Length: 501
Image (cartoon, rainbow, N blue to C red; front, side, top):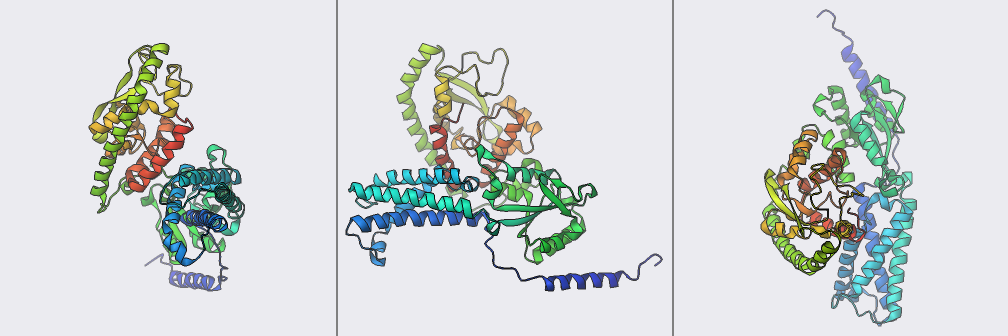
């Protein structure tokens, strides 16, 4: 018993009483609208739908015998349901629900107004499900009110909903590599959009870290405000909404920190891991920050609709592949002529690629590079301004039309329309050594388009391949009809805006 401090129980009782007193003395929090990510997207969608449907109702009421009443709205519900479906589809095409873009007045207004105008044009071309829109003034009223209304709402959102009252306050536990990666991702500026911090609705008020060297310093413009012993007190004092655990190897968490996290949850603060938040905000799996957390990479549970989804996806693959082959038949004579005039050689390019289960297959594409392009330097990644690309290739590659022959691979079952881009065996061996979980992307059929393809260009380095892998693993984990539809819709602007190379 020597050396035992008999005052320890009294000290623990005193500390417990102090914590209880502090909780009791905590001021009553005023109501707030610290909107979560899902709530922000839902708010944007609901107001958008309200505005475009209101524009249609007002235009009909002003220029037709249509009377606004519950009965008439119910009898003509198909008009408004159709309008809502068309709006949602085009809104996703124009990234109207990308929160980083929505938080910028310029990008938010531009994307929403473009979606509204395209929705109007599409809607007027749908028979039976839409009212007769024959009057020019009626069309002008409908289009003008829809576009102006949505643009005004998006401007108001970008101006008002970035204010502190609407932002979630968060403490980041861990100022190391994982924590800094998350802050950098939140501060990233995609395509020139200013301050995506506002878009996600997160305000990182401080780091919590036990490293004494970090005490009182600022990391990525975020202050280190204390250690794990003061986590609960800091969460209360700073009135945070969420505590984010940014520690890759969570088995190394001390008991003191573990107890503090549980206490935070007990007090009503939401607790989430950095990897989960990163995935939800960016649509990517942070492969370098999940340790050996296998559920972060693969879907562990089986859903009752998995077999049905697989069957429906295969049927849709066959239908789209046949349509693609028909389109290829129309384009082929022109491509043959273009190659003959500018770069004589084979029409198709055949290349070994790695598919589902790690099995290799021969992928077919229209040739867009000079013949024998790799005889000197061997296998290398394609890049912008690649001198090996033929004159016709400069047209086919940006529009992704060179991918059409892959419909034959889809028909044979080697590929799907949607999935991770198949990579060359020589690159797979290298990337599997450098990037964790790389082979997990082979759990599904590779695709002509995919979640990674609509977000980033062709990878030109191991680092860019890592970003693509993060998108691919997100797809492998969350593959389903809704995500497939989002990918198809996002493929349209990729082709129209010629984002390939």
